[in-house]
Length: 453
Image 1: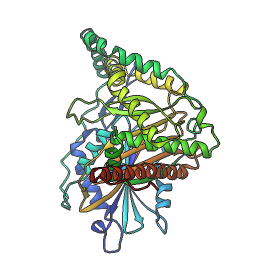
Image 2 (image 1 turned 30 degrees about the horizontal axis):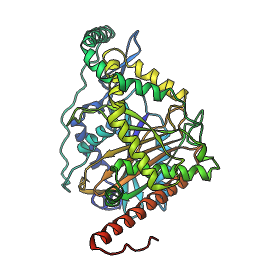
Image 3 (image 1 turned 180 degrees about the vertical axis):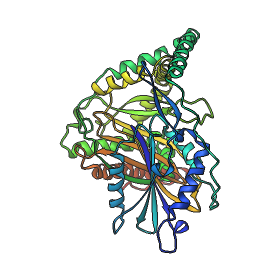
Image 4 (image 1 turned 30 degrees about the vertical axis):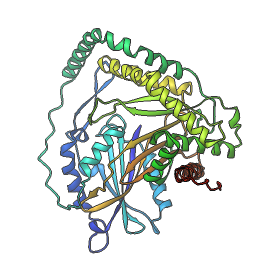
């Protein structure tokens, strides 16, 4: 259940005379950044008798345990880096310590270095990941290293205090529930939609296996954000609709290659996480609702496919109120016990509620730097659930749209072919958008549109 990303930087501003990475400087810089994100110095403690986790300061916190240093073997190419990222994402976090690891990887080709970020999902979601970037990176190439503030762990509460505080929290929560009646009525239809959709099992496909392995493959690609916006402008929908449509086309191509009857698939469902923070909120932690969207993988025409995706996402946002229903579940769980959400997720996994997850997080449109080293690319990672073979995460940054593909090593060995299918599906939409734009220009000039290629 860790989320993460592979960040690629120009290594030259951080190189030492012998060519290696200045890891000591990077360590000091990162430790100072933790002053603005105190959760990264805390660990889990369990409330006795209630099996409920709470955060406490880690009196054993050691920066060098969490920030690690390695080097790629020659030639340090992209394929070798992807293999390393997959291997690091396969490893569990130590649950007795703060739930994160950063790996500085030198020896990446073209004088680059990578920072592999791995954080448990209970600490961070996509939007909180942006907050983490704000703490780690800067909008200017300033290479100044500030000294970390003096930090000392607060004494851990006693077992009696943990139990007392948790019981008090739950009593207060039950009282607050009485005032939620208007909210319950408002979101009841959304809750009904979530449960109704979630109780319909999806068909077994190469994207869903009963049991996946603990090992991961990681792949990536990127598109120009300007091309995505051109498709949106010419063909309709939103940026996320274009993303979902391109992915749907890739799923169709991939299933056909795996000899699956795509025309017979009535329900191929994706989870589309959405941020449920209040307007302007940038708090840490995990604050997402899961929308369940049926993707039209049986539709062979890419333009009709986009139109169907737009209808589905519009209905989810404005008619079904699934967001309100999911938010209601989260709020009730927070006021009582998180076990509600845990059990719902376990049930959803057992009955194959969905086939795929697609999460898209908007990032900064301007360049970022770490100690003067410009960030060149960022490829995000979303975790896999019990019987899910592929997770797709996207992050927009500085005019690019960066895709990360987290796949089960054993049941999804051809993830690179899925990436090629996605690129082909996106090119198909791009060609249609160019043709539509040329037609519109020709019509505006009073000319006959040129024949389509």
